[in-house]
Image (cartoon, rainbow, N blue to C red):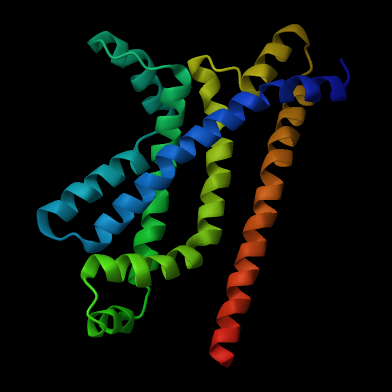
Length: 219
Protein backbone atom coordinates (compact mmCIF):
# COMPACT_ATOMS: atom_id res chain seq x y z
CA UNK A 1 0.00 0.00 0.00
CA UNK A 2 1.18 3.50 -0.79
CA UNK A 3 1.29 6.22 1.85
CA UNK A 4 -1.76 7.81 0.20
CA UNK A 5 -3.71 4.54 0.39
CA UNK A 6 -2.77 4.14 4.06
CA UNK A 7 -3.77 7.72 4.83
CA UNK A 8 -7.12 7.38 3.05
CA UNK A 9 -7.72 4.13 4.92
CA UNK A 10 -7.06 5.83 8.24
CA UNK A 11 -9.46 8.64 7.34
CA UNK A 12 -12.25 6.06 7.08
CA UNK A 13 -12.33 6.26 10.86
CA UNK A 14 -12.76 10.03 10.84
CA UNK A 15 -16.56 9.78 11.20
CA UNK A 16 -16.21 7.95 14.53
CA UNK A 17 -13.57 10.44 15.71
CA UNK A 18 -15.91 13.30 14.79
CA UNK A 19 -18.90 11.68 16.53
CA UNK A 20 -17.00 11.08 19.77
CA UNK A 21 -15.68 14.65 19.66
CA UNK A 22 -19.13 16.12 18.99
CA UNK A 23 -20.88 14.06 21.65
CA UNK A 24 -18.00 14.73 24.03
CA UNK A 25 -18.66 18.46 23.72
CA UNK A 26 -22.23 17.82 24.90
CA UNK A 27 -20.72 16.62 28.18
CA UNK A 28 -17.73 18.99 28.34
CA UNK A 29 -19.40 22.37 27.79
CA UNK A 30 -22.26 22.06 30.33
CA UNK A 31 -19.92 20.48 32.89
CA UNK A 32 -17.36 23.27 32.48
CA UNK A 33 -19.93 26.04 32.76
CA UNK A 34 -21.96 24.58 35.64
CA UNK A 35 -19.05 23.44 37.78
CA UNK A 36 -16.82 26.41 36.92
CA UNK A 37 -19.56 28.83 38.00
CA UNK A 38 -20.38 26.68 41.04
CA UNK A 39 -16.76 26.68 42.16
CA UNK A 40 -16.66 30.46 41.72
CA UNK A 41 -19.78 31.06 43.80
CA UNK A 42 -19.83 28.21 46.32
CA UNK A 43 -18.37 28.20 49.81
CA UNK A 44 -17.77 25.73 52.59
CA UNK A 45 -19.00 22.15 52.16
CA UNK A 46 -20.58 22.86 48.78
CA UNK A 47 -17.28 24.22 47.46
CA UNK A 48 -15.48 21.12 48.73
CA UNK A 49 -18.00 18.81 47.02
CA UNK A 50 -17.82 20.71 43.71
CA UNK A 51 -14.02 20.75 43.77
CA UNK A 52 -13.91 17.02 44.55
CA UNK A 53 -16.06 16.20 41.53
CA UNK A 54 -13.95 18.41 39.26
CA UNK A 55 -10.70 16.93 40.51
CA UNK A 56 -12.01 13.37 40.08
CA UNK A 57 -12.56 13.91 36.36
CA UNK A 58 -9.40 16.01 35.94
CA UNK A 59 -7.02 13.79 37.90
CA UNK A 60 -8.18 10.28 36.96
CA UNK A 61 -6.42 8.55 34.07
CA UNK A 62 -8.68 8.61 31.01
CA UNK A 63 -7.65 5.14 29.90
CA UNK A 64 -8.63 3.70 33.29
CA UNK A 65 -11.98 5.53 33.25
CA UNK A 66 -12.72 4.13 29.80
CA UNK A 67 -12.09 0.59 30.96
CA UNK A 68 -14.05 1.03 34.20
CA UNK A 69 -17.14 2.51 32.59
CA UNK A 70 -17.13 0.19 29.58
CA UNK A 71 -16.17 -3.13 31.16
CA UNK A 72 -17.06 -2.78 34.86
CA UNK A 73 -20.50 -1.13 34.74
CA UNK A 74 -22.14 -4.09 32.91
CA UNK A 75 -21.22 -6.20 35.95
CA UNK A 76 -23.69 -4.13 38.01
CA UNK A 77 -26.29 -4.20 35.25
CA UNK A 78 -25.60 -0.81 33.64
CA UNK A 79 -24.96 -1.13 29.92
CA UNK A 80 -23.62 1.85 27.99
CA UNK A 81 -22.55 1.85 24.36
CA UNK A 82 -18.89 2.35 23.51
CA UNK A 83 -19.56 5.73 21.92
CA UNK A 84 -21.56 6.90 24.97
CA UNK A 85 -18.82 5.83 27.37
CA UNK A 86 -16.13 7.42 25.22
CA UNK A 87 -17.97 10.72 24.83
CA UNK A 88 -18.82 10.88 28.53
CA UNK A 89 -15.34 10.04 29.83
CA UNK A 90 -13.44 12.27 27.39
CA UNK A 91 -15.99 15.06 27.63
CA UNK A 92 -16.05 15.18 31.43
CA UNK A 93 -12.26 14.94 31.60
CA UNK A 94 -11.84 17.93 29.27
CA UNK A 95 -14.78 19.64 31.01
CA UNK A 96 -12.93 19.36 34.30
CA UNK A 97 -10.00 21.29 32.87
CA UNK A 98 -12.25 23.81 31.13
CA UNK A 99 -14.17 24.43 34.37
CA UNK A 100 -10.98 25.87 35.84
CA UNK A 101 -10.76 28.29 32.93
CA UNK A 102 -14.34 29.37 33.64
CA UNK A 103 -13.62 29.88 37.34
CA UNK A 104 -10.38 31.75 36.65
CA UNK A 105 -12.07 33.93 34.03
CA UNK A 106 -14.79 34.95 36.46
CA UNK A 107 -12.32 35.60 39.26
CA UNK A 108 -10.20 37.81 36.99
CA UNK A 109 -13.00 40.31 36.41
CA UNK A 110 -12.86 43.66 38.14
CA UNK A 111 -14.87 43.61 41.37
CA UNK A 112 -16.45 46.84 40.20
CA UNK A 113 -18.45 44.86 37.64
CA UNK A 114 -20.37 43.13 40.41
CA UNK A 115 -20.78 46.34 42.41
CA UNK A 116 -22.11 48.19 39.34
CA UNK A 117 -24.72 45.47 38.85
CA UNK A 118 -25.77 45.71 42.47
CA UNK A 119 -26.07 49.47 42.13
CA UNK A 120 -28.48 48.91 39.25
CA UNK A 121 -30.59 46.68 41.46
CA UNK A 122 -29.74 43.42 39.71
CA UNK A 123 -29.87 40.15 41.62
CA UNK A 124 -26.73 38.00 41.98
CA UNK A 125 -27.85 35.50 39.28
CA UNK A 126 -28.64 38.36 36.88
CA UNK A 127 -25.24 39.95 37.49
CA UNK A 128 -23.62 36.61 36.71
CA UNK A 129 -25.64 35.99 33.53
CA UNK A 130 -25.72 39.52 32.12
CA UNK A 131 -22.42 41.04 33.23
CA UNK A 132 -19.80 38.57 34.46
CA UNK A 133 -20.28 35.44 32.37
CA UNK A 134 -20.42 37.11 28.92
CA UNK A 135 -17.13 38.93 29.56
CA UNK A 136 -15.45 35.85 31.00
CA UNK A 137 -16.56 33.61 28.10
CA UNK A 138 -15.13 36.02 25.53
CA UNK A 139 -11.79 36.08 27.34
CA UNK A 140 -11.79 32.29 27.69
CA UNK A 141 -12.56 31.54 24.02
CA UNK A 142 -8.93 30.78 23.02
CA UNK A 143 -8.58 28.47 26.02
CA UNK A 144 -11.75 26.63 25.07
CA UNK A 145 -10.39 26.12 21.56
CA UNK A 146 -7.24 24.57 23.06
CA UNK A 147 -9.35 22.21 25.14
CA UNK A 148 -11.32 21.33 22.00
CA UNK A 149 -8.05 20.29 20.33
CA UNK A 150 -7.19 18.20 23.40
CA UNK A 151 -10.56 16.48 23.10
CA UNK A 152 -9.94 15.61 19.44
CA UNK A 153 -6.51 14.17 20.26
CA UNK A 154 -7.88 12.21 23.21
CA UNK A 155 -10.21 10.31 20.88
CA UNK A 156 -7.17 8.22 19.92
CA UNK A 157 -7.89 6.23 23.11
CA UNK A 158 -11.39 5.13 22.12
CA UNK A 159 -9.99 2.34 19.97
CA UNK A 160 -9.40 0.55 23.30
CA UNK A 161 -13.18 0.15 23.71
CA UNK A 162 -13.68 -1.26 20.19
CA UNK A 163 -14.61 1.96 18.35
CA UNK A 164 -13.34 2.08 14.77
CA UNK A 165 -11.80 5.54 14.90
CA UNK A 166 -8.70 6.67 13.02
CA UNK A 167 -6.35 4.99 15.49
CA UNK A 168 -8.29 1.72 15.26
CA UNK A 169 -8.11 1.89 11.45
CA UNK A 170 -4.33 2.39 11.71
CA UNK A 171 -4.08 -0.73 13.88
CA UNK A 172 -6.18 -2.70 11.38
CA UNK A 173 -3.94 -1.64 8.51
CA UNK A 174 -0.86 -2.51 10.58
CA UNK A 175 -2.14 -6.09 10.90
CA UNK A 176 -2.12 -6.61 7.13
CA UNK A 177 0.61 -4.22 6.04
CA UNK A 178 3.95 -4.22 7.85
CA UNK A 179 4.88 -0.58 7.53
CA UNK A 180 4.83 0.95 11.03
CA UNK A 181 6.67 4.10 9.96
CA UNK A 182 4.30 4.81 7.07
CA UNK A 183 1.16 3.85 9.00
CA UNK A 184 1.77 5.87 12.14
CA UNK A 185 3.22 8.80 10.23
CA UNK A 186 -0.02 8.81 8.24
CA UNK A 187 -2.00 8.67 11.50
CA UNK A 188 -0.01 11.63 12.83
CA UNK A 189 -0.72 13.53 9.62
CA UNK A 190 -4.44 12.70 9.87
CA UNK A 191 -4.71 14.20 13.36
CA UNK A 192 -2.65 17.20 12.26
CA UNK A 193 -5.02 17.85 9.34
CA UNK A 194 -7.99 17.72 11.73
CA UNK A 195 -6.48 19.80 14.54
CA UNK A 196 -4.50 22.45 12.68
CA UNK A 197 -7.54 24.40 11.37
CA UNK A 198 -8.89 24.47 14.93
CA UNK A 199 -5.54 25.84 16.15
CA UNK A 200 -5.71 28.58 13.50
CA UNK A 201 -9.20 29.46 14.74
CA UNK A 202 -7.84 29.72 18.28
CA UNK A 203 -5.09 32.11 17.23
CA UNK A 204 -7.58 34.20 15.27
CA UNK A 205 -9.86 34.46 18.29
CA UNK A 206 -6.95 35.39 20.52
CA UNK A 207 -5.87 38.12 18.11
CA UNK A 208 -9.41 39.51 17.88
CA UNK A 209 -9.80 39.56 21.66
CA UNK A 210 -6.38 41.22 22.14
CA UNK A 211 -7.16 43.90 19.54
CA UNK A 212 -10.53 44.52 21.20
CA UNK A 213 -8.87 45.04 24.56
CA UNK A 214 -6.33 47.44 23.08
CA UNK A 215 -9.13 49.41 21.42
CA UNK A 216 -11.02 49.56 24.71
CA UNK A 217 -7.92 50.88 26.50
CA UNK A 218 -7.48 53.51 23.82
CA UNK A 219 -11.04 54.72 24.33
